[in-house]
Image 1 (tube, rainbow, N blue to C red):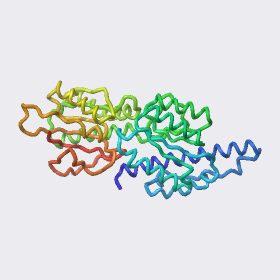
Image 2 (spheres, one colour):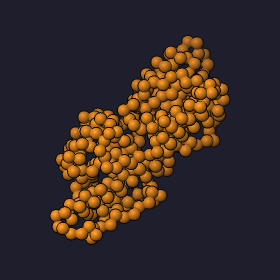
Image 3 (tube, one colour):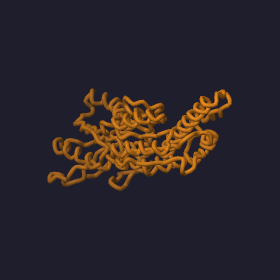
Image 4 (cartoon, one colour):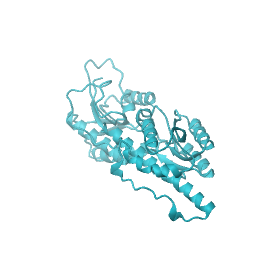
Length: 335
């Protein structure tokens, strides 16, 4: 199985382990308070090692005792289907599979997608709590709606796990994500290796970014900016521009077209994920009569194999980038 699937399964499993523990602890606390019994008789929280969490979800079965004593149900809310295909292809089915493996029945959990709408994400959370959710696994579209949801959840005694993206200024009890600065570092290293391998002697780089409302985009940028900074400082690379940033592919394409119109010397692009990496493409100008290439690196959302839908490889690359969410792929693209 591809690496992003393995890592995604592990992150889903960690979230589920935490949420079941939270639900069980909440149930245990309320039971103890009402009965006056000692917490020493409550079910012990099973020990699950990180190394045991994988896409088979076999380790989740050890959490069944928690599922049997927990109260309420679990609701997971994913942000959209545009910024990354992973939310529908991996996160949603993996969360469902992990919850079922941990002993929850289909009526004890739900996995929804806000479809890119703050209002929908908030109403989904409120509806889930009304229907008895005691734990929310939330991947916030932005910190604004994330904080609203966490305030509402806290007022109703519901535990919240920030999943994938952190709600800045929020009140979540737990945060489960990738090492996002390392993701950015791997993207940056992938770019440097690509430029070297393809013989780009003077990279004129357009550094694109994710949506400024997503804290992960900020963390990715910390990683790849640190890799590129020495190259810009010693003038071996030229930073041509840094558009505002977005996760929306059409907007990313527009950002690129505007930058390329203003700076025809752009010969390389760094962009944080595959959906956006497939969008940047200069319009063929009258002066360009032969193919022209660049390096684009990104962190793939779904596949470890080189994409062939919008790029052509001069040769099969011997390298694989150790991107936390999958290998960052260097791309040589004839326009």
